Length: 350
Image 1 (cartoon, rainbow, N blue to C red):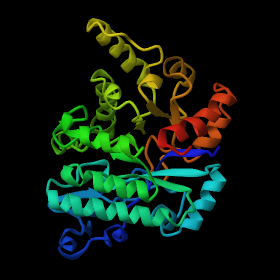
Image 2 (image 1 turned 60 degrees about the vertical axis):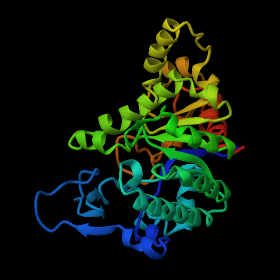
Image 3 (image 1 turned 120 degrees about the vertical axis):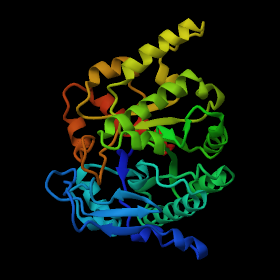
Image 4 (image 1 turned 90 degrees about the vertical axis):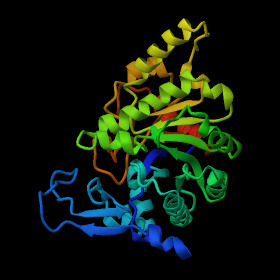
């Protein structure tokens, strides 16, 4: 089996938008630089955040959450051989790539949303095609254009995608809304996991917590998505669909399962012997998690791990593979499941 980094990132660049065609070019994001005003430190606590994406009337920090363990060319997918060599050093055979810009809501302009997402998907597909199968990715669905979702998922499936990217909230809808059922049906048809990454697609909720940490606006929203998926019994509706919850650690799993067990019993529903496994749910743990405690609730078949490669935030740990292998709390056989077997099941990389 191969060691799989279940959460790595691409950092979007102007090259990401070179796939815009014809009239779509008018939606191409600009990069603007700060020339005066209060200085803001990047996540590394050393460099200044100076550059911003500007998409319509909204701006987003471009150089705030940037890892410093690799070169810019590797982070921004200009040096694929260099990235693969670095993966070798880290003990990683395959990385599953998530976006950076799209961890937050970008635009409410339906046409701009569709154009930018299609360009992003084609850019990631092209850079991953240079990796001999070692770089896989999650396809972005144009949620504001439901009639085009199946087309984009099919493009992803045919071009190396192994999952579908979603955030804890999408627009003004919770993830259990029937609006998303056709998306889930298509993902199930194409054998693509639904991958909820720490993030928030609701402008109202995101901007309410703009000056707060990402914990409230990103991570709690995604934890809530897992609760919703189980409480609404969506895995029963889509029995072949796999669900992933990424970059929110796994410390919350015992609490959520305890709460759900009580709710199920109050409704007269049977509870599960192994809730995550029986619902095809996989959770990305972190090296700082209390893994023996979590494993007692999650079981050993549904945890994966990621490095958050390319970023610099509390979830980032490029040495995650080595640290897990050296962790005396985790039996080597369970370690292999987390690094290889479980991740392969989640992403359909069998």
